[in-house]
Image 1 (spheres, protein in one colour):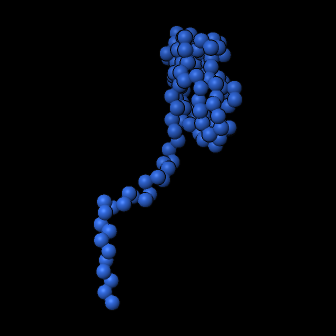
Image 2 (image 1 turned 135 degrees about the vertical axis):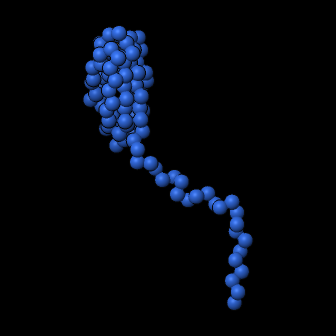
Length: 104
Ligand SMILES: [Cu+2]
């Protein structure tokens, strides 16, 4: 009995393992300035940890405060801080500066 190999030489069907998620945490950049903070909200899922890098371009002291995540860091002018941002819940988290509130 001869097994005729069927002609299935397509463009080798999309590598099945492409979707495997990389282990590296997502990074999150946060910018503080005298008149704004960017982004104003961070969105994520519970259990995620973002590799956050925050830097201040302002001339004044600022804070990076995220009440829902218990984050409250002070930044001197030109300060850069890298820290893991652990998301305890799913949702949008308001980012603000305690000293200047909505103004960054
Ligand atoms: Cu501020």
